[in-house]
Length: 577
Ligand code: DGT
Ligand code: CA
Ligand code: CA
Ligand code: ZN
Image 1 (cartoon, rainbow, N blue to C red):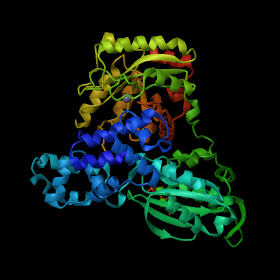
Image 2 (image 1 turned 90 degrees about the vertical axis):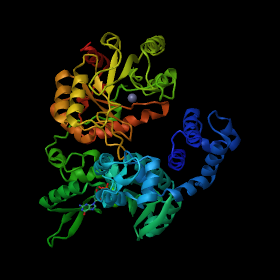
Image 3 (image 1 turned 120 degrees about the vertical axis):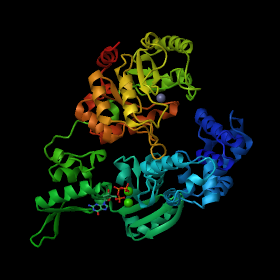
Image 4 (image 1 turned 90 degrees about the horizontal axis):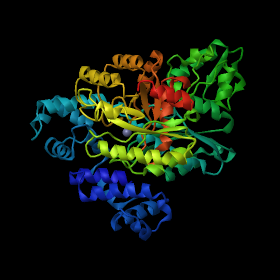
């Protein structure tokens, strides 16, 4: 709610620095920092939190009490979802957005594409042929268009999780799962699919659950409503398909609606080859007339895979990319799992300008996860505003060393997130960098250079002996910023050659390196590291998202360096130093 207020107010005030926008941003950070559940706090108590003003406190209370905020509704009228989508295109600042609406009558991405095709965008003040072409390219790369409009997973997952929790709480509901591309952990989502297993009460009347869903989500319209399936459109324009099934068909239904379509087709073909039939109700023996006969399995996915003679295929791998053959030959990789992770190796404190929890709190939180090692990697000096000078870093090292005795079971590494400059240079000098116990090097600037230059830049950083890993490979924000273009195979070859690990960053907006790149890295034997890039104690749970992304890339446990035992990991981390 507060992020949306901040975003829409930025559009209205035409400045992210406006007083109101900062008030919302500060309130959001203050609430996170406070840690208490805002629903338990009165408006007066909210106002007492440093960083929350009276008018923002009133809005938070109104949102908790009524589920909506007048100011937000008003802004949503002015900036409907299609306009917000336009505002996400790189180069489309609030001022340009106002101009394209007022001067060109553009109200959505399709309209903007038409204006670009007709070379009308370049006629606006401050625009030209180059910026027009650049924006056209950005739209193409973001895939923000027409019927293949997709929602970034960072927007869809929280909504789906809320919905699943709400549905679970209903009487007669036995089980609930989200399925589809979201369960497979695709980075963008066409629509949300939810399967509900309901007891006799609801099974008799699927309508009841549908009514309940409708009152529980921010639904605008019911597009389609049947006995057992209802489709909603949320206010943000995202479709949600909810299906109700009997509990003994829950496995077959979740399997079918998880897909992918290609995976389902391969499974069905396998069933046919075995003289059986697989559909959303179960796996059946085919009778003499070719019809569904005796039920072989339906209540769990595990039982259906087993009955088909297949090893269980984890949802992130169900993309028709060789997994059914591998499952038949019992050759699925031993995939990395969340509980294999023994340390986080990209981790900030409030030493970084954008870090929001103290060193002591961040370390305590990691210890709570049972980690054996932890690299504190605050930003290097070259990052504007957020970076630390050499002197500040040395003080930080003392603070880290001073904390170590309190954590006999977890090795604290004095680390750094180094910035890779446009030419491939790194922060500080080589001697100073050699003092770090561990580093992650990342791109935070010059996103527009051609692929050749970006590749050279990354290879230069990888070749540097003070670099242990490359963070968020392309710097993308899914659906919002495309990230740098690179020659992937050359970069992977360099990582392999210099034995530098490729990060899978678990921040939902990033999920970078992408699973397709992870798969290629795995094939080459490039080492991986899965990190949260936490800037606050509330962000450690992102490890799961990194792991799911790695699983989509078929990453086996033993290639992921932060699953290794303490001594093996430390030997590797030190081998270039
Ligand atoms: P999305 O929504 O575009 O991100 O991708 P999905 O995979 O969630 O696709 P969706 O929502 O159209 O359908 C959900 C699942 O239902 C899909 O993954 C597999 C299954 N499914 C849908 N249509 C078909 C079909 O025509 N044949 C088969 N075998 N399965 C289907
Ligand atoms: Ca879907
Ligand atoms: Ca669907
Ligand atoms: Zn970072």
